Every structure is written in C-alpha cells, then in structure tokens.
Image (tube, rainbow, N blue to C red; front, side):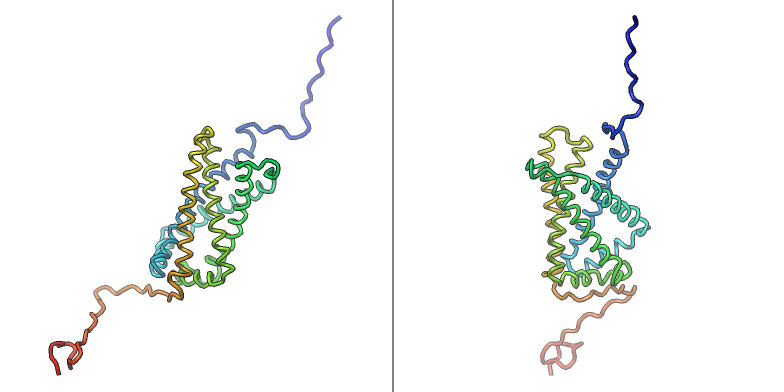
Length: 265
C-alpha cells in the first residue's frame, strides 16, 4: 500500500512575512532616510551654523554673508531641491519611525536604548524648532534675501524675548546631538564601522564634532544677544567707482585755516 502524500503547503500565509535584509520597501526608505540626514541636510546644517558664526564679526559681516548666499546661481531651485524637500522627507518619515517604534529604556537602560530614545526626542525638538525658525526668518517679516542688511537686526529682535532665546539654545543643543548621533548610526547601518570597537572609537569622533558644531552655534547666539547689543542696521550701499571719501581734516588748536595747520593766529 502506497504511503499517503504529505499535505500541500498553503500558497498564502496569514500575517506579515519577516523582512529580510535588502527586501521590501522599508529597508530602502530607511536607508534613504539615513542618507538624507547626512546629505544634503547634514551638510546644510554645518554650512548654516558656520555662516551664522559670522555674527561674531558684527552685523555688516553677517549681512554680507547672507547677501553672498542669496546671490548664488539658481539659489531658489537649490533651496527647494536640496533643503526644503529633503528636510520634509527626513522629518515626516522620521516622525513615522518614532511613533511606530517601542522604547524599552525603562526595562533595559542600556546606552543603545537611551540613544534610541534621545534620537527621537531630539528629532521632534529639531523639527518643531526648524519649522518655527524657517517661518519666522524666511517667510515672515522682512524678506532677508532682498534685504540682507536687516539679517542681524531681525534675529536680534527675535532673541530679545527670553523665552525664544531659551528655545534657540535648547534647540541648538538638541539639533547638534541629533546630527552627531545620526552620523554614528549612518556609519553603523551602512557598514562603515563594522564591529563594536570601531563603533566605539567613531562615537568619540561624532561626540567631538557635534560638540564643536554646537559651540559655534551658541557663540553665534551670544554674539547677537550680548556682544553687539542694540546693533544698528548696517549700510550696504556700494561705493561709486572713481569716488573716494574725503580725508578727515584735522584742525590744530590755535590755527585759523584748517588747510594750513601750521599757521597760528
């Protein structure tokens, strides 16, 4: 008598199939999310903080920096293609990841779990701050691309509110922490730092870089609020070609003609 044939396996299984490395859209979107945090958003963050450091040199230097950036070719296309659109994708997908994840730091208080939680907390802080900052400095009030001379004054007026100043300081620390830890995660996810020892050493590098970047940002805030209080709006009128300002006339006490200081009355 022939043995009975084994039952046929069902063609469709209920539930969600396990996601293997390299399969499914989630893997691709997470890699793009990680990459967008470095290029172009991370690169723009570094450039933005370094440019804002020009406030240390005063209102005119900062105005000239704003004017230079807004005079780049195709600056509006670059602004949308490499800043606003990637930032929107990174922020929205990051929020989706944050609310889908489950933190276990209360059960397993390890450094990795704390990093997991802080990366999401600082990401939410950075998102709220960037939305507010872009709206107030780019799309409301005086338009700085057309009026760069008002850049320092506009920021100074905003930071005159102590609550807004506190928000800027907290957001600067949170954003730099999010970026530094994001670089560490990027290197781990993309296989740049294989092994615990390599990741540990690279963690020190990321911490040092994030601290330095945050320090520059806080110096810029200090310059606006305390180094140049009540700074006047600088004049950026170009000097006509071939015309020079007359040299100041020094009048010696006891002379009658300033052009001939040697003649004494």
